[in-house]
Amino acid sequence: MAANFLDLPGELRNRIYKLCLLHKEPLALWTGFNQRHELCPSILRANKTLHHEASSLFYAYNCFDFTIATPKQIALFLRTIGRKNAEYIQHLYVEFPRFYYQEPGDITVSDDSISIFSSIQCSCANLSTLTAFTSSAPTIEFELNEKDNPGSIYKALKLVDTLFRATSPFLKRIIVGVYDDRPSKFITEMENCGWIIKATKIQFSLPLSSELELSLCP
Image 1 (spheres, rainbow, N blue to C red):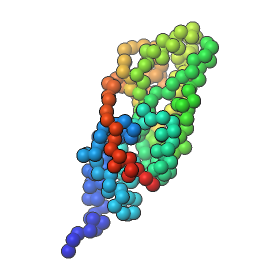
Image 2: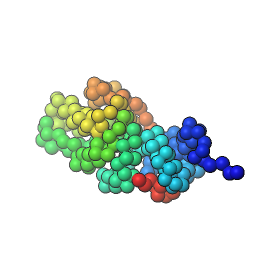
Image 3: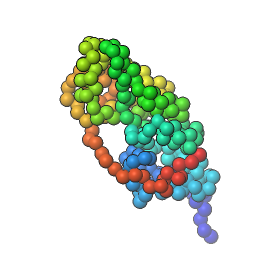
Image 4: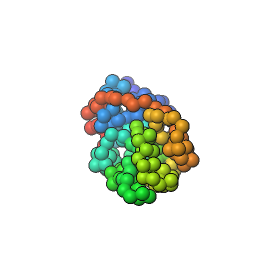
């Protein structure tokens, strides 16, 4: 008699789900590594029971990469997967917020950045780790210093810190990936915010397979 997958112990089913659905690198849904041969997202569409069991593992244990997505793409993705699945998400990659520079002392976060973090705040209630990447830390510092305002760096990073920490009441770690970690006032002020600073390298990758995209449904 053929064995029924659902008759297997829950611990064993979870191990199989993890082998099929978890990836060691962040899942870049718009421009990321092609995981077609490494993930088996079709298991999410097998039946309602498997979808229910596997979805929590897929969304909770994978890290999702939003760094190149537009505000509309991020909002659409979070609506598509549904609130329940979005609440499973615990780790996101995002682009470091951008600033508007106006008169000295007049610094605001861009509308696009606010829109992205607003979508995350409304959907990812259990987010515990947020990783933000900036490829232009020296440029940001230079532009802030050009405003001839000694407190401009502190003010700008305070705005970002408030934006970060508002995303989830369960946020435990804020990591900032920088492509130039030479000592600077900007890096020091980021560390003073309680963020973890990590040097990283820019990675270019290919679009994710449509198979995975189609499976990301409520």
